[in-house]
Length: 109
View (cartoon, rainbow, N blue to C red):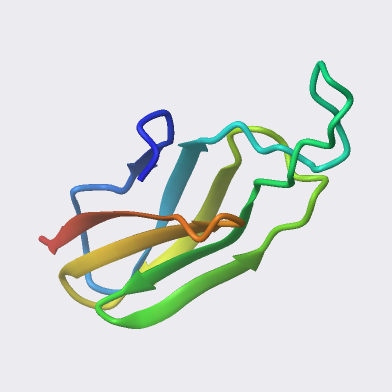
């Protein structure tokens, strides 16, 4: 994992069973579109986050495919229903094959 790529996630610490919660994610990633050239005139290879997924207790909640026009440091905010206590797992995949993963737990109470 590249040291300059940092995933950040906000998930409530607890909720009631069946509640809809808001999840916020941000990943620090430079996102090179593949359209620019370096100082020597060589094309800089595309390097973007191309897939984002969120799973809860092993079940997919959200999958997003990203394309070249995505901004640097992509931010997502979405809602999810929490049926039980468990773990959210967030995964970002970039063009170089790097996988960035973080997880957050939520309790029922």
